[in-house]
Length: 220
Image (cartoon, rainbow, N blue to C red; front, side, top):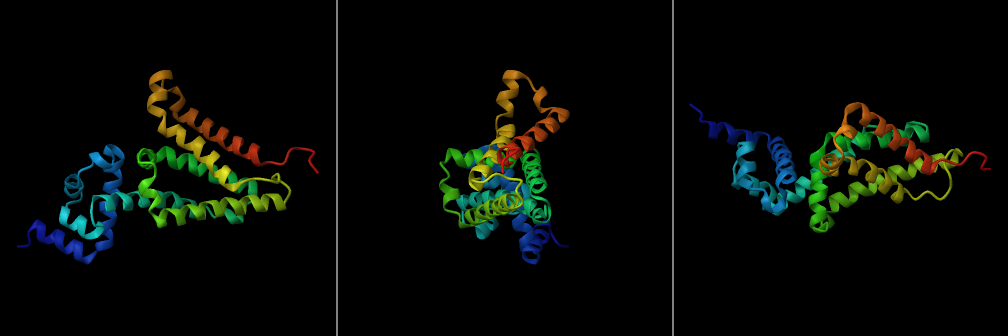
């Protein structure tokens, strides 16, 4: 009779990609909750029914696992953006859709926000060493650049828009909504984070970004 260990080992060899993805999913959760120093690889192994040896085989060491988990968290954002098909929408509609997606993604994925907060505590030391993350985020700026360029060509966006600054503004509005929710709620109460209010906040976020890029009325 095959033991549980035998069954798990067959899973590792027959579908290693699924095993690695499972490890990364749990690792994001653990690192987001406990930070780099507070996370225990033993706990990740237990939650994924693998072993420390298997995790180290795939990711090298704890720091390698953390870096890959950080990459996986960013990848989820970029993959979500890729499904939006923004190039076939009018520029203002494309930008509104991207802002709405970012707001909702961050709100629905607090572990991503926590991972970014933790990496900021480490002064982006590990992110800076990841070519994968740099490449992914260059693509994000390129996406915004195309939207802005089309909007300018069609006369609906003003000249002089910096896509990097625009990305910062979208991120700032969406990120703070999650990163500071605990302290903001403790000081002012949680009404701002009720479903209906959050829907209003998302609309206001979209309106704010569109106001930044739109050509003023009467501008030739």
